[in-house]
Image 1 (tube, rainbow, N blue to C red):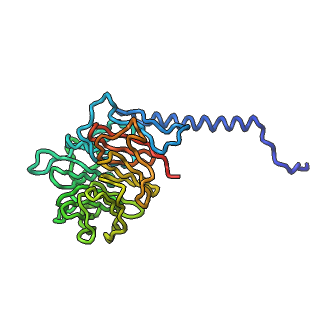
Image 2: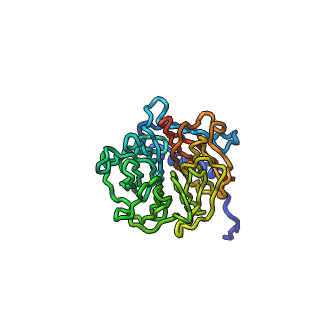
Image 3: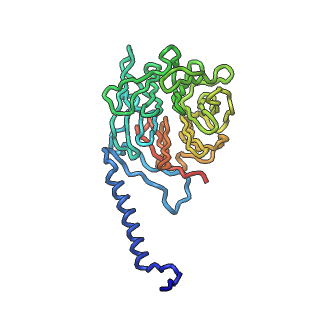
Length: 329
């Protein structure tokens, strides 16, 4: 029998059935993901950008909610891809939240010998651990990133004799801890087990009190609020790559946004400036751009790239303020 040589036509009914099957499968996956998302106490609804707006920043919400007790002086904040860690300084604990503000527990930081309580401020996540600047004892401690009524300190960077004298900020990148030391205006670098490696800055690169460190493609960015500038250092040699001066009055905290931009928290101006790789302001979160989400006493920031949201601790309100930031064009 001779073949007709042509391909067999697909009936429209078959195509429709296949499309419906795909839709049902996608709906099932979405439903399953919603069911698997743990419902934690205190979760809030966070807003997103509306389709008819061209705004590049927006106020998404805050937590704890307005009808809930505020946090006791929240300062530092860090994101590990699943949870937010917030330094509730006056309580001596690090609170754990999910991205919606749901309560996932607390890490009680044990006080140092001779000190009545810990005062956690700046935080950094480090491979399942949390590095904590404890201003009550002028130390940096590293604890497991899990709830604990009294956390076990797994290591103290520089405990062999090269510890920072007056630590003010900490960051973790590529298996190394970077600790700003206001005692001599340097950044001390330690390996993942707390062993001393090198010192950045010093006489050739004068830096004062730094409240924030961030690793970016340009280098290690150090805030220098006393001089109103950002200093970019080579993380290996400590060489000063460049200095951004002028637009920032008191840059406290800094967060890399992952697309060449940085968020710079200006404590005096009560704003978060979005800057490009050259340090120029390209956008701003302030009382004008987000009139319903103004800042009273902003302290720390954490960028959550999965949702394109910036989380800012506000000690004045005892809340974590959440903002949406559109990706760079």
